Length: 92
Image (cartoon, rainbow, N blue to C red; front, side, top):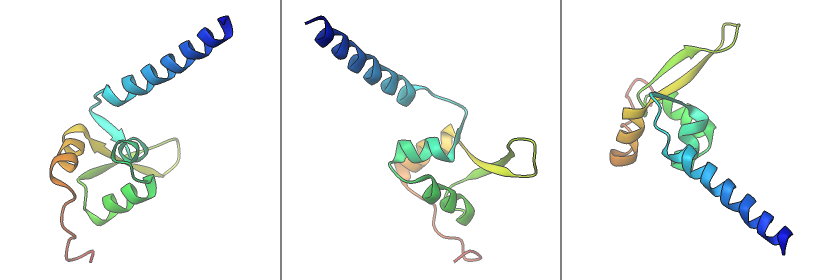
């Protein structure tokens, strides 16, 4: 019986952690975080950024010259409410 209670507590803690992650509002999100919220792959979100379907910025990551896309909270809300921006003519 004690093992059953411990298993149930572990499941409850896991669900609570997931809910906290979903409800935490940040100023900026990574493509992985946006992908998780939207139920898409991070590759898809990066491609949307590249094509201008999402208003995103690049920031330096790590020590090298590489950059990663970041998406603002306001943009994430806009995507959820209105969808993607149209394809730009210079990218299509």
